[in-house]
Image 1 (cartoon, helix red, strand yellow):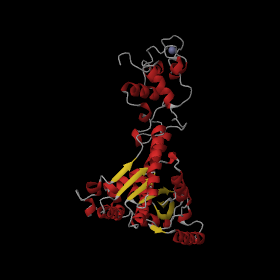
Image 2 (tube, helix red, strand yellow):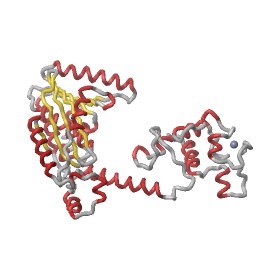
Image 3 (spheres, protein in one colour):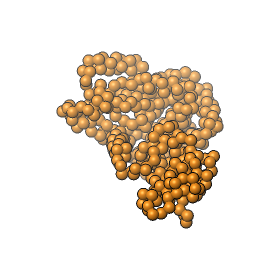
Image 4 (cartoon, protein in one colour):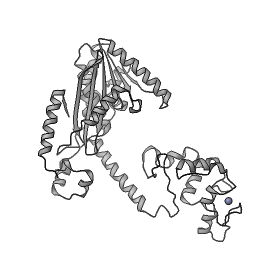
Length: 394
Ligand SMILES: [Zn+2]
């Protein structure tokens, strides 16, 4: 990681730009991920070998000992502020409180506010920016660059450069850290993430020293999500995204970055095999999410479909039967039990198909007929029609 002042940043930028101008246009650092996938070269193998995972483990460091952790001693003076919910009203209330807290620090000669943001690009470069506010003006703008880390680690890096600078002000008693990644701040304090131990230790020690030297000293972390559009944070966000430097070669990966890359690759192959495979069944129905994107398999947030279905067992089982075409309806009987009746009991369909049930059948509430292929429309139909796709005795 490199940390520098504005002057040093410009010098470093010049050096990087000049270095990149001198690079061959097909240098590894200039290739997109797609181009790298197609490339077969010994250089690529060397890069892969050199890009090992950084050594980030230090579990025996004293800062991680039970009873000596930051959270054990200073939990009352390290405070996290976040909105109660993501509702518009909760965000508005939170924004008002953030404004008041920020203005208070700027009126006090012993308070400092840090506004931080981190960003990563697909090519692997990461940038962290922190603005230090005191007496209603920005007294320092800090930037740090590195490669092959996750966005959460970039946010953590931004908080670290901000706090490191703020601690140099010996008169500071209260420090506000305004970030769109409160989780990153929590990771420093809890020291619980083994994959970040070595990067957390230096800043955790500085926090310990700051809080130990005066019982009035405190640190307040304020969550400032992008949708709050808080102007001072938006400025930092814009600066972060505009400040990327192409990654240099070779560069080691952080453990979390390697893990994410591996997960992305697995997910990609999973989705591709799901797309190509006939194993999901000929009658498998594809749906779109609320953003009109076709739903693909994923493993986060409870999976792709369950997330929309909710917690009702009845809705879940009837939706699954309907989606797979394995439901007690004429269309299914026709395939597996051809001697059974296949017509719809309403008398208006020779074969009781799913389309008939959703769009025409008078046995169901017509006001709930899906008008698009959005999954929520179908779930709404199934919830509103409790006998749909249901066995008589279920
Ligand atoms: Zn019918």
